[in-house]
Image (cartoon, rainbow, N blue to C red; front, side, top):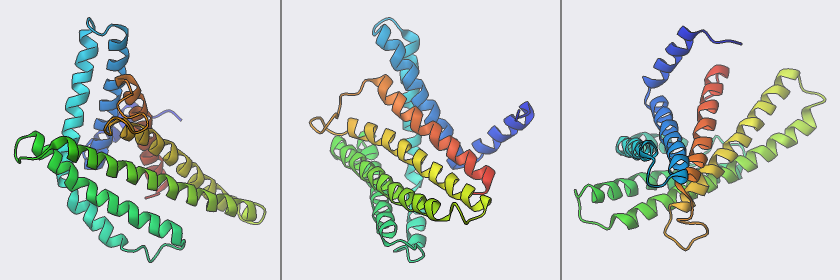
Length: 239
């Protein structure tokens, strides 16, 4: 179905008017610039002024997101408080994985803030240690998210096997849509996790071994999946 140009423009404006929507756009642009810039500078490390410009733009956009995350603590705290110990969750494994995930996310923000403040010379601290800690917490959160999605996906597959012959077409369709969402979430988290490990101190797996274009590729894959899932969720009324 073809989307009218005016409708597409209005949708873009609506996305940019929200904090989360703008963050998704900035994230996608940041990794996209790093991917393109990394490819160009890989071919010509010293002579590609445009490639280096794209990498500089990517760094600025990434820094912009870091600054904006200074205001995310209360939102995350509110979400963690509302979820609590996940009493409304039917599956105990999903509940406790989600609780640990929320804890890792909650701790991530202050650690990143300290690292940012140390880089800005607002406080005296070793920023590299705080960046490593915040990255490790991000990696833990991503890993927990992958485990959670795998658990949910396993449950959905079991339901599809038992209900596909007796359930209505709409119910089966919803289950398949949820399963597709979890698969895409796993792919997105794996892409981000590969970058998180790259940004950890050297010596752990492939830490420090990714080239800029590969970091950009992993981040672009994750970002585009995030944009798609957000759009699909809005279109279907999913939260």
